[in-house]
Image 1: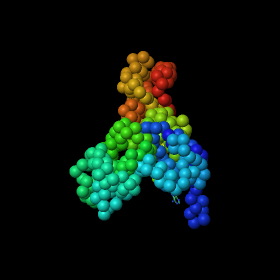
Image 2: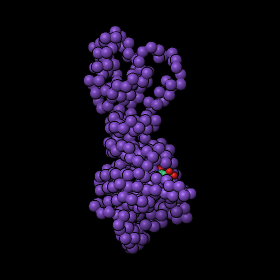
Image 3: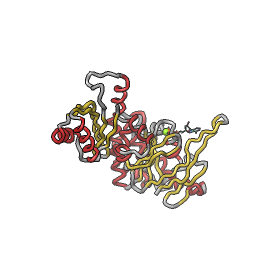
Image 4: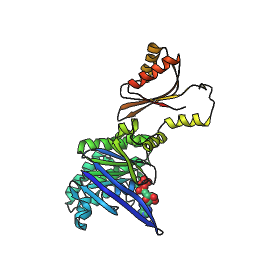
Length: 342
Ligand SMILES: Nc1ncnc2c1ncn2[C@@H]1O[C@H](COP(=O)(O)OP(=O)(O)O)[C@@H](O)[C@H]1O
Ligand SMILES: [Mg+2]
């Protein structure tokens, strides 16, 4: 559906070259929710803005449904842009226009009749659950409601693709969840292809099927979200995910304080990462039942990625040395990742 081939984008700032996007290749499938993640400045916005040529790549091809859109005429490009909606962190609504008028703006450009526009706007307001706000002005709305208006406006011309640039970054967690749920519903109902840029890990975990991780303009890994979080292929993906996740909090404490009363000094700390149906609790009982090895749990966390559990436990093991060896072997056999933290 969307193919980005060898995309590069350079900006010139004060006669210095900024290489914002470097040799990016991506394939985004129809009706998937695809995430683009990475730290601020990684090149996410620049890359995603190349999908509708808001940012024209310095080199490379942007192919949408088989058509290289970098070769379209201005008129063809204007038409194409109607099939790609976009929403932003700060909503970008017209403050002097009502909700109704904001949604009407892109519709007016299509040349359809007033009656058809009114009907369409009513449908859109219903879709985003804002029927009673048609005559309100943006400053009379909450952040979540403003983003719903922006979504309705982005969908006005029935696009095939919706680009979301940090669309929930200015919202509180509860409102974020309701917007994510709306995006998920739209994806299912309308078979809408959605590209989500975010620096919020929770957003990616909640709604994305696959994601690309960017660093310094490059895509360093493209993977299913579950694999990205449970078994990243690239070492620096792992760093990013740990930084953005929970394990780091524990390691930070561990690094800061050499001695913690509940950590035994001279034995290793293991970090176990388990996916799917394995549970930490059952494993710990098994280690005792099979090997008489006791596990002292120092840290535990369970994350849900698209409703599938991903657990982590930091433990120290005590028992006969020989039995601990066997227990470690057993853990590896269970397809649990085992890492020595210290
Ligand atoms: N219009 C622009 N002019 C000059 N430099 C830009 C422009 N847009 C982005 N950049 C630079 O490109 C790099 C990537 O920016 P951006 O795509 O916004 O990253 P992200 O969205 O991941 O935070 C940054 O170094 C940024 O300063
Ligand atoms: Mg950005």
